[in-house]
Image 1 (cartoon, rainbow, N blue to C red):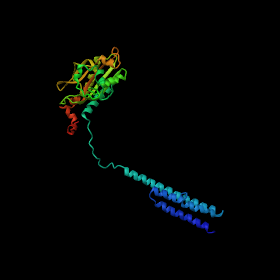
Image 2: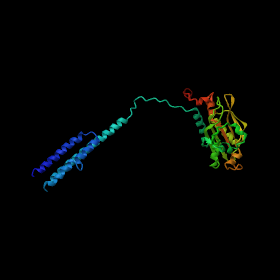
Image 3: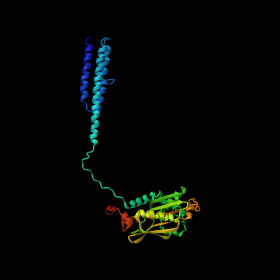
Image 4: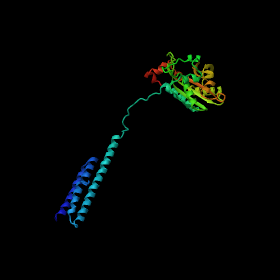
Length: 333
């Protein structure tokens, strides 16, 4: 019995020496946690030794208890020190694996080019947005009402012959212009209105150097009290100067079912006149169709084909080139 305290003291000191060696040799946080449980856990070796202190006399317990606390603190300190070292090493390894060598030569990836249609459309939208217009959009599959009837073109109107149309089995159609967007916008909005409506349109045109069955339009609409044809002319002049520079333009009398009076706009380009836009004052019947009082409000509208503008700006000889997906052609832009 007299040797038991010395034996327990020796076991505690041996446990400390063994534990510190094992802890310093471990190289993963997972293994370190296993050692912590093995030595200091509830069922660990330290706990097993301390449970035998119940057999000691009252005089011997304080001495052995002090030694046990010292051993426990030493093992915990070793665990903390090794954990800190392993965590630091883990962070350093992660930093090294994720670091970039800025001296290494880069991998060249050629930049894409702006498609000529997109570039032309973006240029036009920038001008109109700068003039205070809002961009509006609508569905490409339309009803007959929005595409024709609300635009003063009833079923028996001869103006329908001006647009060869793709009709769908359910009676709807692929829109022939983005003017339908203007009707939808006016139905849910009150004047004053200033919008531009870009988008894809469809017509059963015979495809040739200047025509396509699918193309892009941009149309503008302004409705307010007191708008006149002079406001329309000024707006178009500012827009065309922004697109092409300070070139001569002229207005020729024309006809559209949804504007009255109507005009075609020509631009003098390389010594010859080019038709570039159609425009006019909004017909009173169109204003009535959306619930506006034509005695109070007037408006003007204009529109153009984006592909035609792109052909002029980039001197293209055939509209079909922009749809051919020929990289030799596209790399020029």
